[in-house]
Image (cartoon, rainbow, N blue to C red; front, side, top):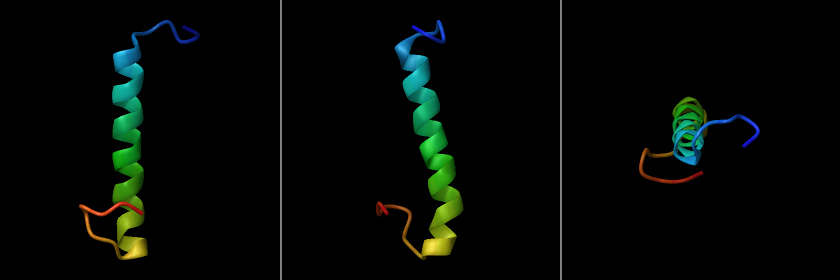
Length: 37
């Protein structure tokens, strides 16, 4: 409600942000794409 946008938009943006962060950390941590860190 604070941002005045649908919850689906918020969840989508959070998901994409997590993927972007994981993509940058993965090479540093040496983990595979399918595994969580």
